Length: 570
Figure (cartoon, rainbow, N blue to C red):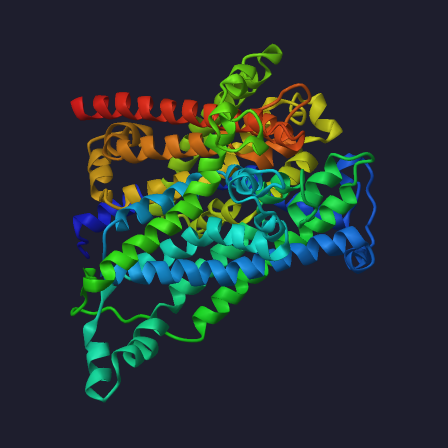
């Protein structure tokens, strides 16, 4: 008889796969079905609307013959490629400086990076548009149209996206520089290498995985971005794949073939970026940590401290002050052309939010309810996914992990198109599941978008909870759900709260999903803001943005305060 350590017995008994299949089924319905429907629609057009026939695959090649399709593809590739190069360079450089040098205002850079990441792209884009508009803030300050001419050009849009997306590369590279092994650089120095040569030949190549990961994140986030083209459409024509997909659904006649083809190319480009990253990673080895590794501590900057601090403040004024500051200024301005003069200040923009039948307030209420419902549902599903990934021996849990993060790479417009195809089928009405045209389809799509955020946060928290605690409760007769409720949940309560609030905050301002799926006569906050912006009601749109953001932040802070206090007392 072979005696096994009790830890192995405990793990074997606890890590069952009873949650694996239900979790996979939920992820299949929420994520894989909509994405698969986009591809199926291209191959079998009409299958989701009662017509079964094989499509002509040559429609995929018609992109070279249709000017709008071709221009959308070209603009998306140009914007994403240019942004990837410059944002990766900017983010990587800032990360290296931040990790190696200590200087005043460095923590402000860290805070600004996170603010840019959590701020919806359409809010940042609207700020840039109002700043650079022909009669915007830049013109009133400088009296020149130079800023407008630059921003509303391909190069200018790349610059705007670079200043919005570089935090993705920054965090990737900065995290990779947490540890260092000086023996490698010291060996190079002993062989006559200069400090710069040692950095260029030793340290820089070892950062390549982080650089590639950051570049891939920037490319995928940029090419699927809906906020920029939606914001600039009011003043500058620059069609991209996400915006053309949206236009195909909300113009008459509805062009599902166009939406399907453009969605196919969008997914193809994102997949190509991921494949290139994996290929580059497998060509070489980058594991270098050993027992001599030590945490990297920034060195004093000396004479460079003041220039670095000044440069950092200037950078923050541009990347954060222009888009956010312009939104705040415009919310108090009578006209964009009036500048910052005292006679141009007013509260009428905020007063108008409560007029017009309180349409904006209803939209805000709808968004808050949808985001709250989606956050709670996604929290339950994410808890199950994280449990399977952390404790289960379910044979397909790697597939579950892949599906659970898929919506991070897939643009919201593609996910929205897929939800239309899946939940707009006639037979669903007979069983009471025709969700298209109802708020519930927004809830489901928001759940799908929130699952990756919640899962990543909970997996990290569960990694600190030994499986032996759960199996010890099982040995004493604790039920499966009892162990989750009594043992696991109290130990990760903080992560559960943070994950739910993060999902709630991001769900309120999800413009892409809301623009594609909002039911008739059921406006939401991001749709209301975007419609006002398209109608050139810049003051109203800015006031709605500031007011809505303040309400969401207040709700999150109050929930954090009350629930954290309850957690401490417990």
